[in-house]
Length: 123
Image 1 (cartoon, rainbow, N blue to C red):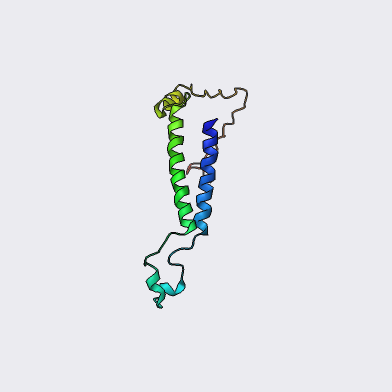
Image 2 (cartoon, rainbow, N blue to C red):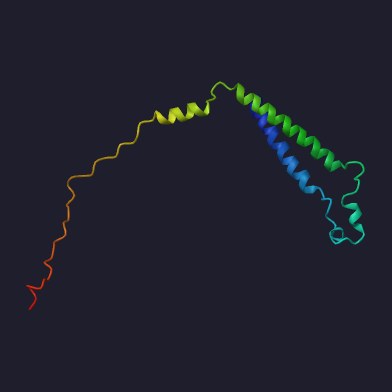
């Protein structure tokens, strides 16, 4: 039960990260900064205090990291887990599929050889 709740929370945090990252404006978003029209000093300058969006994104990223660790831990505790080598061994234990023999009542068509003209048969 806890595992499913954690997965749902993990997905919601991931969607939240996507939304908050897409809402933020990039540092080099000004067209004037790209061509050096006087505003280029703000592109790499100090940013001041972090905005609400960037702080929220950092918190969501931390939550995403923590839920990833907890999901990995809980997945390791599961009783029905299989190792990759065990999965490969179980695939080898499956007997090969035998092909059915061809039916014997089908007619076999043999091409008829035609006599070739030789110099002796030529008129």
